[in-house]
Length: 107
Image 1 (cartoon, helix red, strand yellow):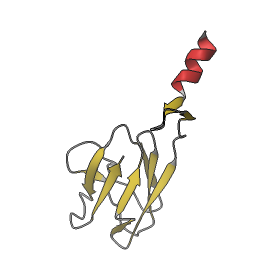
Image 2: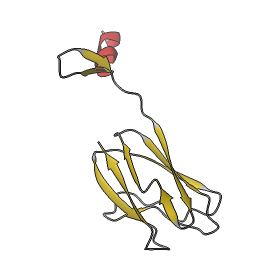
Image 3: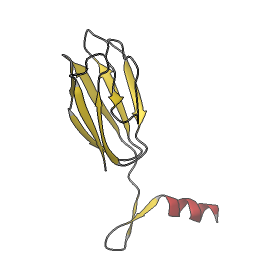
């Protein structure tokens, strides 16, 4: 019974009515360099992990404009990761350099 329940939880119903295994979560990287985020717009799925890597000589943050996430200060050479919990469009910026802006699209 437990095995059947586990199998049902890992399958996804397609539009044609057939079942496919649920996609495994992925890891994506945003590079911070030259006071910008690259890519400026990243599309991910719920459950995916996003890693912000600071390759700049300055500290930066990745802070959601609506309070969904906040990396706090990411020092040069450091990184911060976030597991995306829900769908939506989340714009973010650097609180230390407010002209730095980007967005995280979760589908």
